[in-house]
Length: 382
Ligand code: MG
Image (cartoon, rainbow, N blue to C red; front, side, top):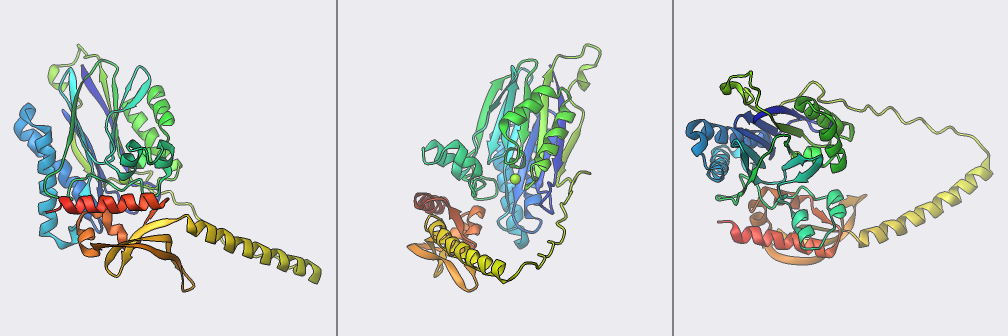
């Protein structure tokens, strides 16, 4: 068998920077989705991909993928400790290694590996996210998880703490297998049945990668999008063995493709035209007042069902409402204080930097789950 590869990374429609990256250096293929302020995310994904690529060049087929991912984690932590601007950066990393008749997958975070076999798409990796954990615990349905405002909170990533648990899985490969590696910029924007359809109906791997990226952008392109497609096809008897795998050797990070930022311009809102007599205005006034009253009641009812975890008096706390102040009125009330110091929570992982703005939850139970997760991360930090 040989592998045909298609790959593309794109900044998306909304973001200014592409912090994703990919590696297509046979036999290693990988996707990394970096996060962190300034250049942090871009650096984290690049350090991760380059660390594993360098180790693979060095050790060849002896490379232990689990060790390589852990080395990438160490490399990110070291780099972050050398440069204050990069503090708190992190990345996901999902790797597939072609081993002839089988592949090994190594995975941390919420980028994904899928297999299309017999026209059916199957996710091979488990998302290391808070919402996925809640789904497995029965606290959230799959459908609720898809639209959850904090579906991107990771429970595992590289660059968070020394020592990281890596999911490693090996599986047999047969001719016709098509693997997809992607960042959440694809899966967050394009539904799985559509991804499956594109993969089923687009034979050329590069064209399939391009189409998936374009579909994610058309759906809003709210995040960076990275797609790597691997097709296991019959060996070509005409070709010498050395060239049977894809010849590209590259780590691509932060690519901004030609189709990068098609922004939608919003034109000026047309001014309301003044017409009609006083009666019309009186009716309008009454209707407006009734609507305003209904709106206030609706907002109050809505706020009562909203929750978030934030900071009160430099301690982590659960609030009822939304983390917003309108015309000096706070749309939230303290529900429950904890004794977790805010500073320690921020240091426990990049995902907790959001505490300053409030991490919203759709129920009180969910807010408590977030606090439990912070406590768990704190217990594990050195
Ligand atoms: Mg992403």
